[in-house]
Length: 500
Image 1 (cartoon, one colour):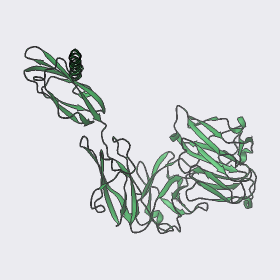
Image 2 (cartoon, helix red, strand yellow):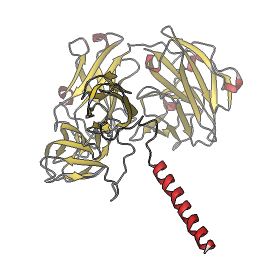
Image 3 (tube, one colour):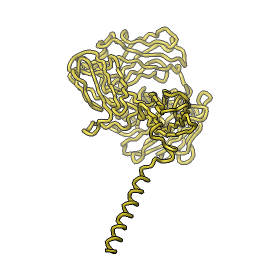
Image 4 (cartoon, one colour):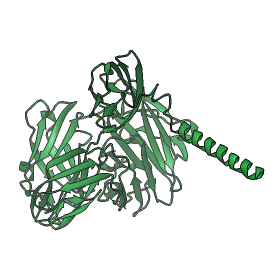
């Protein structure tokens, strides 16, 4: 019996310990409640998960309360003594709200609430292409901000964010997808809307782009760039496919206007021998002012076609007239095997020209240089097919890459027929010379459709006088210009720049 009594007492003791532990675990933390009064102290909020820019309405529903003090981290207002304040949260983050309520008997209670503010949802998208022949598909890219990483394809579990696309006249119903591909079967102009909803908060953002997609009966093509040549006598308009025969009335469909008003006549149009994808638009440089910005534009959809029959889409290019002559940086890479950087000043602004991939440097006949004829001292720098030549132009503290006018290059000691020179950026305004004057030794070459590969069709002769020069179709990349070739022997390259 004694043993049984002891056993039962032990069980009773363990039960009491367990009960104490249970009730102790259920006590509110001191950080959340002080002297908690479950009968009198009631604090409410209509939401604690919102999106940036939204508001939360709090309410002190306590019994026998005489006053209260609210503090709102990240909210506006930051404090309040109202019974039911409305607080707006402009920025995303996790914030704490504190309230201290005073009761009629003089006692106080304090509570803490945690608020999660999501980043604002900003719907946005792009499409490729935005102009196309009917019956083809457009690939949409979801660029919405504030929803984290957007899956390329929505899975069954991706339900927290709703992406709803609607294209009147194309989609009878809403398309729920992150990055849809949609076929446009008819000719016309189409609006596109994307509505993005965060389900946890109900926040909705809609982006509508009016007349964003245009479809045609015929295939379409786009122009790539436009740039004055280096002496300002013409603008080279580059297209993405061969031009074919140029229409006699093309110049009447194009407009060249000055930033301050007025237009400049385009006197004629022709195809340069070195590219099937470029149209040379001739102008009178004396009718323009150096340093002035002009706009080359085309707006008559369907009136400009290329050799394949494709319709050229409307375009508008800003082009800067740099004058009939330019001052080019004089670069003498005489040390470090030709790979040491050289400083130069263009229109009072400093730049560092740093080339790499040069095999060696040697003295040159300065009269044969195209960009700096008769100026010196200059060196020729050589690179072989085993190395890639590169030129990095770094602006000084007083300059930017946009302060550069044109970036020019010239190639010498050319490879045999069929040699290809590959550029990291499209080039234009190619010129072919023989500095010794013999016309039989003037080289020839053609550019690829993308403007990045020059193929030698006539070497002319292999010496320092036979040269090909050109300029970049656009400004030099911040990562520099790269040139490589497949000639069996090394050749020379010289890259320089003018000021704007």
